[in-house]
Image (cartoon, rainbow, N blue to C red; front, side, top):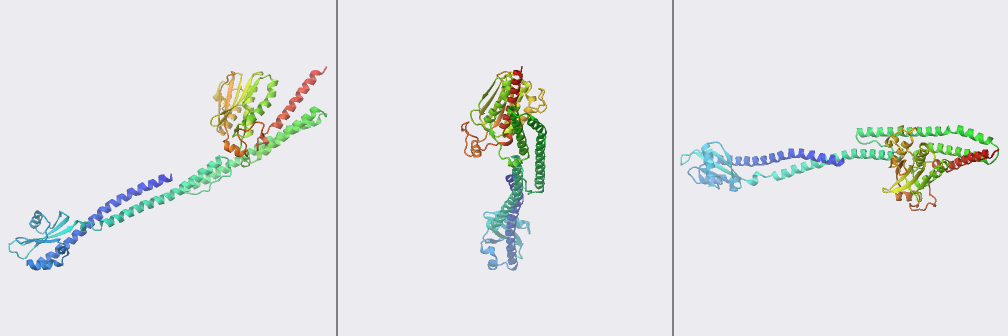
Length: 489
């Protein structure tokens, strides 16, 4: 934009300068010519005065010595019937024309310049013709004297005007472009998650108003996010009431293995709710980079859902979790993705239907999570990812959440038919750059072994291992009770 404005100023000023300089150069040249011809007229008038004073040739030659043109061989006097006095350059036809026309002088072009021919009347002549012609030669150098200097001055002034206008336009454009780039940089930083980024209004009034408007919008967005975090915290806090009831029921049980497991499960759930509330109230700017190991999370969640798969007699297969696959998604959101996909398998397929989960590493680099089943499949894949339009008897939010998280992480979701006969859902996620990953893990690499601990891995609300243990304890209690009832007489 800055360059474009400078080019516009250059083109505009150049055209204006040419429109003025070219006519001025012509005027300067004409003025120089008129000045030289006027000087020749004055010298011709001086010669007329000499002829009026004497008609003696010798006396005329002495009198014209004071005329500059005579000393430069540029003056000639033509008297009819007498030899020409001085050096003549005019054509005889031009001299005859002037003598015939009487008192009308003319300017005629000759080699090396022009001649000014002026007729004058003599008092008496021997031939009886009383008209003489005075010839003043004006060389070409006199016709263009001072034109070069004036032309250079005009050109320099024109160039100065063009350069000055470009400089002024560039300075003005720099303010506009600088303010625009500042606004764009702050908007980019705000979009990347820096919620404290604000614009310093500058530049023209319109850009300043845009900066103020952006700051107002950013404040409202931050306020909205804060309100949503508080709402999430409040909703999580409501879980305390049923948990309190469960804890009281657990404390009321007799001492024993089952009661201890129940109390431990309830205590674990309460801790998880506290972690969720603390995470929800934590500002986004304090959460740091979001990433996790796709293979690790998938292995955990498949292990979690495996207990239910065994209860329902489902065969399942897990592949591609033997190496680290760091993706640019928070652990909490990735867990929600896996749970939605596996939950749909259990919810929308009959017990005993097999499923498979795979983790793939593609070019890009892109990591893919693939969940397949041997069910009836999804009849309308496009409708399934639209909020509220799943068509499967559910709320229609699950796959829409998966789509939103995948697109936020630079990926996508694809639904088609599985080789097993049912649905095949593939979720592509952008992997972390190896250099960024090594920096974030303080020296860890993508080629690290699976048994090596994951350095600085984000925990908190995304760590579902205690919750897994609690649910496992509850299931164990249920199985124990069922077995004890079957053993009763």
